[in-house]
Image (cartoon, rainbow, N blue to C red; front, side):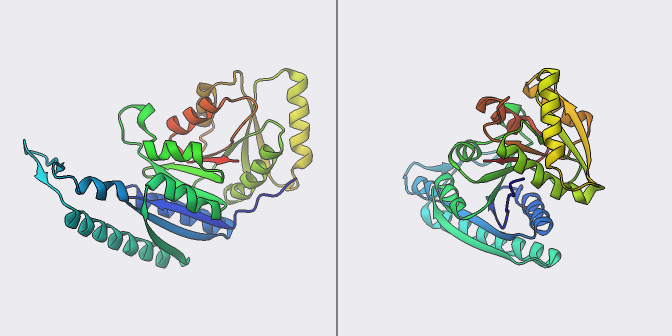
Length: 278
């Protein structure tokens, strides 16, 4: 089986409350995979450009007019945010006894993160699970990164943790084989239980896929729980995850039985961490 090396993990931090849970999840993953962890905060250049406009105002709750903003105020705000994040990274690094490098850059957020991700094996970003509409769970920046990054990508919602059981999709491709290998490494922390989702295919094709999977599994103590989908739909996958109480999903980008739109929809709707493997 082709191996997948996750030696460098990059977690993108922002100005929201999602940071702590995302950083803690990234730390757990880095420890489990014995990987290097880097944290990155991008100071949004577009906010500074907005602050330069004479008519720019900040809307304050309870105020009809809001208040004016300027570049100096925005600079101070970013400086305070950077300080808080640096302290947070230091606290979590101390608690986990893991070295976490913290870098700060200024630029367009999506472009800067995409550029930084070229030097990493896995990029971790957060999403807002508190939005009312499922379709809005993934913000514009996260959606841009889903389309533009070429490295493996993990998307976590607010409050997410890295837990088991592990769920992985399998269609027989090389990428899905490497996904199974990574999933099996994570599953070792949970009595070696691995839930494998097979596509909705005929009996002959399913048996071929199952035999292929079992031939590649070298960990004889790994307990495989095969789940054969009745339909290759987002609803079916989410239902299977819920039924088997999956806590993290490994999904192949370009999966043969899911369209790109379906893959994106799974990321949007899933309430567990999703790892997209390129």
